[in-house]
Length: 274
Image (cartoon, rainbow, N blue to C red; front, side):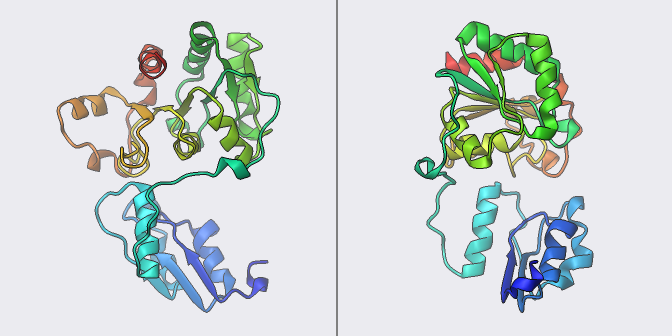
């Protein structure tokens, strides 16, 4: 289908390129101009050895670690050969469809993640849901994908409260933006939910092992200051000692996300909500 369109130019801006869902599409397009990102030096990007020759032009990124928003900005400034005036990501909510039927006061909880190492324990999430219901009188909306419905069922089975609202597989991405925009706070693993929250200027609390520190997290104050993170103690202690953990966890993290306790998360929620 892509090839049949007869595109003249194809652009793949992705810093960590994928062979099947990125490079192969570029090759298949048959475009005259195939422009891509030379890419990151991490091991996940080794496929570029086989696919660099799919491109007619590769744009070389800076070598230092960089938050992904600035990385994308860098790519397009190099591509267009001019500075970009975009200072931060944002979503125009006036153009998006509203998801109907939500309660007046609610929070959004995201207990899912593609990588099991990035998932905080479901039992801990259930405890946090109970805490948000009892202490803050909030309903808990869980808008995961249809494939993650079992996670919501596990939480509902533990909490046993009809204020747990299962939206798994029911909301579109645009509706998700409006759902997050209307909530009091987002509690999430390191997933797209925190980036949606930043884009609609909503407070979030992210529970993370520190993977891709400096690239996808934490948000720079210059972009969004309402996001808070809870890391395993190894990273927290480094930050307290003013050591720089960015390079240690730039490409990988073997730290256990479940070393983070529900008590720590509750304390951080109190900091955010009072």
